[in-house]
Image 1 (cartoon, one colour):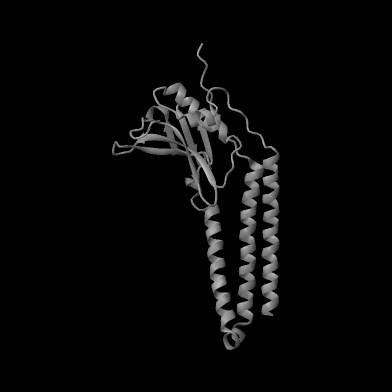
Image 2 (image 1 turned 90 degrees about the vertical axis):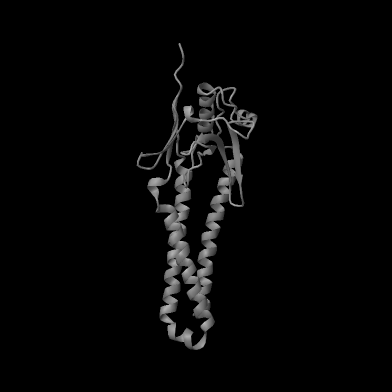
Amino acid sequence: MIEKFQTIESKISKPITYFLMGILWIAVILIMVVIGVVFNLIYNNFRQYLEQDLGIFFTLIIAQLLLIFCCIALIMALTYRKKQKIRKAIVDEKGVTFYNNRNVIIETILYHELQPAQNSSTDVHVSNTQNVKYSKTTLQIYLKNKAGEIGPIRVDFNFELVILSNQYDLYHHFLKGIQHFRPDLRISQQAIDQYNLSSEPQKKEFGIFEYIIGAIVILIAAGLVYVFMLLVKIIVDKLH
């Protein structure tokens, strides 16, 4: 009897995700507080600044505009286009389907639609994106576009502002599906080794290193809040 291909659904790591969202919303609130403080200074000392110190006046105006811009940018990042942001993924015998927060399908990648690469020695391989801010791992596959041309597409389980606890399992299972349903495609050796395709996925539990990093992030966040409030106090004291 042939065993049915298992279905795996993404799982959100709620504590980490809520913590990150909380930090961002706290940043929004702190920026709003500073905007209010700066506006109050400008309003109460408008004539004094114009007559005695135009430098401070223009500095406050520029700071106010920058703070308003940062606040709007953060709020938009947290709330804008929620319907188009991926919040769930399901890997099954057909492929992978991505959903938004209302459980509406955003994108579907089917195994039977995958194409062999034209200018690469492998048809499926790991793609690493690294910059100053972060490092991200995805899978690169090939699909036909509307014009019938074959081009690279990324399978990405790095959701915006959401941390998954089973991201490794999703990549592993999607690759297992390719092995099972599309044995004609060539998977890179790096992907085979990195996602342990010769056996069951190894569960990645939080170790000492991850807990240390988490503690450092919390300390940095607390330090930033303290420094932020201290700077506000210094500015208010100097201006008065």
